[in-house]
Image (cartoon, rainbow, N blue to C red; front, side, top):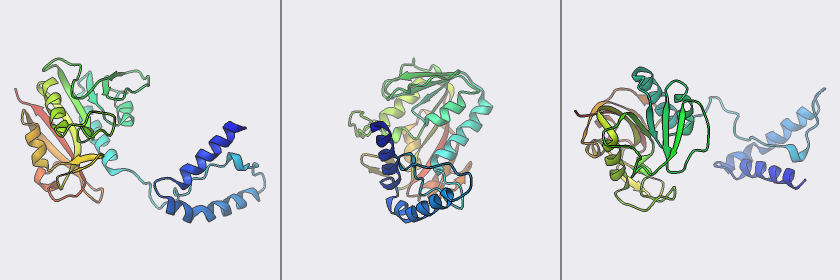
Length: 252
């Protein structure tokens, strides 16, 4: 009984103390009304209080999504579908993206916080992005999506380091072979540090961090969540919090 009550309390806490509590409270009367209507229908199963799990903000006109993560995953998958280079190495990107990517290309996934999951085609390693377990000039294709902007801010238990992003950029360049490809994303726009969440960079600053690489193409997601493919990096200069998608190749 204690376990059931604990699950009940967690379900209601997630609903009412989540990211949008005011919206949840607004929809609570509708939850009660819908439950009452359901209970009055012929054939309805009995619903006990302890089994309720309110989802109070999901009734929307359109399917919601995080534009940065949605488009960066699609961007990576489309380019890797053409590259077909295996094994592919990813450092710290969304595990949902990597789980799908590994379905058609053998993938080595490296993260500071090791992923405890098992899938065919996926090899998970625990390592620090500032000291990656690969030789110099050894990786053919490499991805790192929405990661390096966090390095050195302590958010994930890493050491505080004002140069964390720069050092991460140097390490990614070190392991990439000449002619190898790096697919990178990070926040772009008005340059600043949003401690301790992330940094935001001007696209030009990103190019300077990766001076050993040649930019093949640049795409981005703007402040309204719209995706712009194959643009000039300067197109994203005036954003507040966009997502820059940089496709690099290491100079030979």
